[in-house]
Length: 244
Image 1 (cartoon, rainbow, N blue to C red):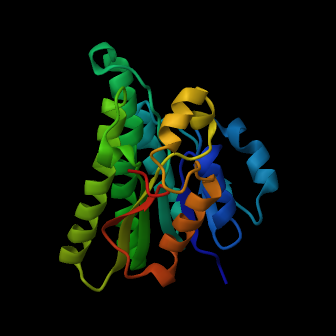
Image 2: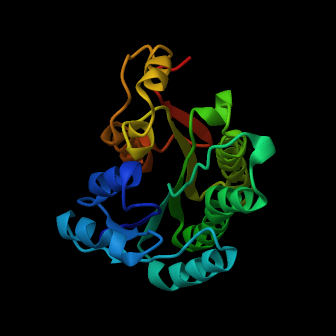
Image 3: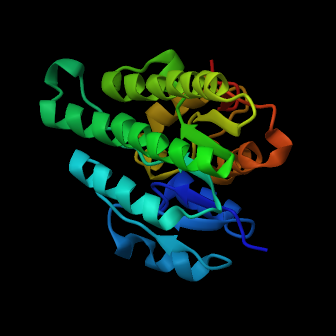
């Protein structure tokens, strides 16, 4: 039996890499990174046969070309999208360059929007599909020096809700869902670069008293994609240790 196919963007490191490992046995993956060499070692480590589709999402024309290539690669078994690729360029808003703003908007909002648009057309043909949009705890709370990043992650939540409502109005019989998964502070390169003082400050805000492991996020994504989660739709799942 042919495995269902799932796209994972930003799969070369951090949470995206953990998601790829979590899904690799059950699904046939289309793995995205900005450059193919970033995925070479990952492909050797994963179970099963998987494909690579690369693009620099900071360039909107590259996103359009990526979506065109995805249509050709997807096929009848195309089942899921994990819009994980993202970038945070931290700086006070008054000093944030237009280039950096455009880069975050292109990668964090326009790319998942256009990919979801493409996926929905394919899912309707296949009568099923799941879109997982990766949010962030700061999409709800906001964060100093992350005005643009926080805004883009808040956009993922409302995009998810709107897609779920829209699909229902188009055809209630379609087995198509959209879910946001919003990590808190996870032990990745991003948190490793924080100073000890800043880490302590954030740890005080987390009832679970530790930075999450990428695998803890990946396991939630795996469940959200599964048939067991078929009643989870149009909502945001927080994986943040209870951050306040």
